Image (cartoon, rainbow, N blue to C red; front, side, top):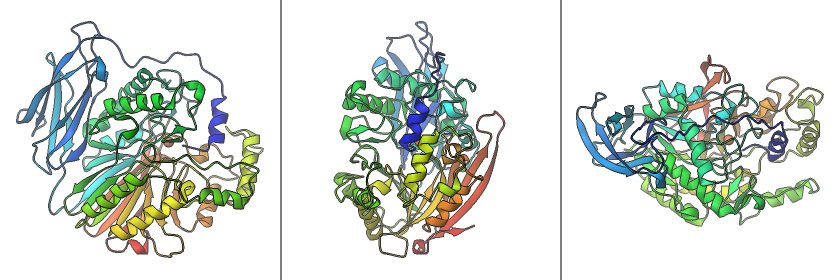
Length: 540
Ligand SMILES: [Fe+2]
């Protein structure tokens, strides 16, 4: 998400009339192809989910052979079977394979009528004494905005246990809306070309993303553990609606359920779509080294964001944000989190994967930082409004935990009570960032936060006519002493390495988002030592 005022401005841009290239073909009867790659995810000590989609003639029902092998040549078969697919699941195929050895690098493949899919690599969870685990953390992959170089970089790594996708895996916008300015030039016009509303729309959009070669390479190389954020459904979603959903677009429940159904069809996630009861919070244990706890801060229990307006005083705004009964996780998920932390007993690290920023983030006074006479994708009117609002240093965003201040206190109190070394992961903001997480009134962190930049989606620096590059970032870091690091300019991914003694996050940032040639470098690394989370993050 980004500030809605920016989005509204971009949505009023010139509408392209070009029709998007169809990424889902219907083949002649008897013809089959694997055009959307393969994927695996949600590893367990004895298995993982494998996924593919078969392109076939519309209406056919197919028998698909799958197998999991110990070798890349696919000769030593450990498990195999046959599964049916057809129009009811959009020809996607998902198998929850069990009975595999733990801590193993394994290979999988699908075959339909003699046509073979590519071979994918996956891993089961290790058990017992684990010396190291490494994850790629990503979020916010908007297809029309740029190339998925980040996915390619991750595909090229051979030392990852899994990819954690924190959401905004797809975006719901149509051409002419948010972050589609370069779509035509890049030949990445959204398909379907309009905003997603129906099951067919959401399926087609997932198909377009899964047809991307860099996405396919990442999925083929590593298991993915994914949670959704808002754009898998609609901008700034909560359990009862979304900023980007109006009554004239049909019922919210129908749209949400269509988006959820398509997500479960097209992602290598365990379980099934169950409308508003759908639970994507779940945990994974890497022996005694770490417990990975994935949360849903978006759809399951989240109440509507606080509504503030220009005519409210700063005190009225503060009070609106602190409203004590505004839920983020919801009571069921909150008690599940407590029990998950209990299950994590004996692990060194508790890694919490969730969507939105937990650290407090106050807006610096933008007046001296912006040159309003300079060209910007944002109108002068909107910039002037934001400059005026920034004078009292309000929280920058109300869709993050800053809009749910009481719920954040409960969340951090649970981490303080139930975790030994809590590391919180986040995305959503299109910003590389790190911060210490403190309960109100305390001066020692109860956890630290690592935020990944976006795969492609634009950051604040793309919108603001700063007097010099990084001016807003520097002022933000100065104002928010809880933050240790921030980069608003570059896209990238976060590499998390955990050992029995330390946890290190490295921000890999890229240059060349919209060219085929790109470069990648580590911008920063920050560590925390086991048993010393209370000391906060340290540079490296
Ligand atoms: Fe995003």
